[in-house]
Each structure stands twice: as structure tokens, then as C-alpha cells.
Figure 1: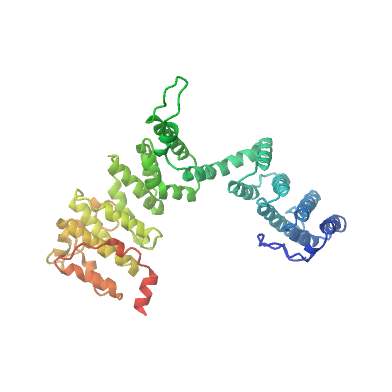
Figure 2: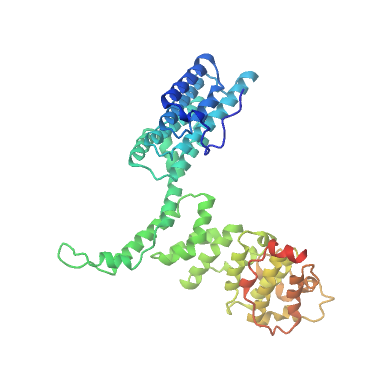
Length: 459
């Protein structure tokens, strides 16, 4: 048995035959196909597969049509069935693997500039899904998802779009799977690409005359657009969605969606659910939720306790840690936060810094320093006397800051960090032994620290 067909489907086939007349090549393809079916020369599949990526439309079309027919006939003969004796089983596995490579090459050719090849590839892919599903009496989602993913990203010609719609309307299961797999990602791409309402709408529509010769209301036009824009987003957020789309929405929500909605407060439930999810999702939901609380006067009493719980060891290794610390600095800067709550945050940050990488500690210590300057009542954490004989009452495991007993504790963690092996950490830890006379730090100077910054200092 020869090798499987080349899996790098984006590479064009090596074709010395390109110089030959395309009729000669198509005749060769037909001959190879007949040899497979009549003489069982299965290795010819590899050669025909190479022609499926030909830059010559006639050759590409001939190879696709021939190879699809070959797989259809072999499947009908039972040569691709899973339950067979050992020698035949190896052949069946080889055929299924190469059919998948052929199927993927059809997906690549959906972007072919030749319309006939595009339409043919779509039809052949649907046929393969249908035949593969019928052979095992189970819809082949793995194959169909390849087609769906490709169609989502295509700018479709009217001809192939009509062909797709006609085909989907012919099969309920295909249409259902397309609706489930395609609609959410397609709508997300459209909605996230839409420009929000602007004053330009007034300029364009405001001077149009009604049937009574009156000018349209220049104020209502943008409001109507904003209402439609809002309804689209709010309905979309009710759909089941993939994790990447969910995260993508949370990343843009506070800056691009909330300011342009007719009633942003309707996002509260969506954001609370995301914020309560934990992990990266909670971090991404922070900005949107905080915006609703402070700009739109919504109340969520669990905001700070949930924020407190997010400070753990995993945070300092997280992809979004810089974003998180930037937001946390903003959230904790309010002078209306009670002293016990600030103390709890400071103590928790100091504790997780003990097991943090240097880049993480370098974010934490300036933030703690700034919080002390903003909230002097928390200075008892570093000015507590007779701490040598006191057992630390702080309970790290308590995720409710009110139950953590942080206000009764002290920051002995800073003493340990003074002797840290990394010089910058040690230097920052020593600033707390002074009278905090230095101005607050610009946290942005410390948020981009990474191992690339740390290693040169250590070498």
C-alpha cells in the first residue's frame, strides 16, 4: 500500500503534466479511475488525489469527479466498512483516511476561482456526508462540520449560494446542523463588524420628505437604529455559543457594545452569569459589569467578594493578568470601599505573591503600595506591634473577605520578599519600611513584566 495522499492540501500538486494537453491528463485520470474499480489498483487513488489541486480547471474538475465516483463505488462494495477481517480492515482504514484527505481537499477548493469547481466541490462534499452517514446509520457530524466551518468564512457567489440553499432545504438534518453550527458564528461576525449608530445617519436621513411633504424627524432616526442594534445583540446573547465567541463578546462588550445600546442595563444578567463563572471568563466580564454598576447605577453587592476570590495562584500565570491588575487597580481606588475590604485585598495579594513568579510579584507590590496611600486606615497591617508572638489569624481559604480576618493580621509576607532572589522584587519590598512618602506608582510601568524581562537580570 502506498503512502496516504499528501495532507498539506494548500500546496499545489507537482505537475510535470502541466505542459501536456489537459485532454491527455483527463484521459489519464479516467483510465486511473477505471483501473481502481476494475482491477483493484487502489494506489491510483494517490495519483488522482494529486490532480485535485491542479491549477488547470479541467484537470481539477475531472480529478474531483472521478475520485468521488471511486469512493462511492468502493463504499457500495463494502470495502470501507469497519467490521471486516484483519487484511481487509487495514485496506478499509486506509481508504477512509484517504477519503477524509480528499474531502478536505474539496473544502480547500471551495475557494477556487472557478465557479463550476466550487459548485462541484459543495455537491460532492454533501454527497460524501450523505453516503458516509447512511453506511453507519449515523449522521457524520465530523465531516459536515468541516463544510460548515468553510462556508461560514466564504463570500459566496449568488450561483453557489442558491445551490447551497436548495440543497439544505432538501435535507432536514443538513439544514438543522447548518443552523446550529453556522448561525451563531455568522451572526457574531456580522454583529461585531457592524458600526454602531452615529450622527451621520441624521445627515443622510434627516432631510428626506414624507408623503405629506414634511421632513423626517432628525432625532428619531438614530434612536430607531440604536433600538434595532440593541435588539440584535440582546437576542443574540440568548443563543448557545462556543467558548471563543463567548470570550470574544466579553472582550469587546464594555467598549463597543455597552455604550451603543438603547438600554445597557439589560446586559446585567448576562454579565453576572459570566462573572460568576470563575477563571478567565470572570476576568473578561469585569469591565462590562463594573461599567454598568458605576455608569448606570446598577447594584451588584457580590462584585467585590467575587473580585476578591479571583486573586489566586492561577491568576499570576494567566494570559489576562495584566488586564486584570489594571482593572483591579481601578476598582479598588474608590475611597468609599470600607477599610476591612481593602485590608483583605492587600493581605490576599501579599499571600499569593509568595508563590508567584517575579513578574507577578512586580505587579502586586506597587498595587499594594498605592492602596496603602489611598486607604491609610489599612496601614495597621504593616504597623502592628508585637507580631512575633502572634499566630496569623488570616484565613486564606475563606473567599468572603469579611470572614478572612485580614484586618487582624499583618504583612509578614513583605519581610520574606525583602530577601527575594530577584533584585527588583527585593527593592520593591523594602519601600514599605519607609513612611510611604514616595508618590504612588504608575502601575502601567509594571504590567508588561514577563520572563523575557526577568532572565536578563539573572544572567
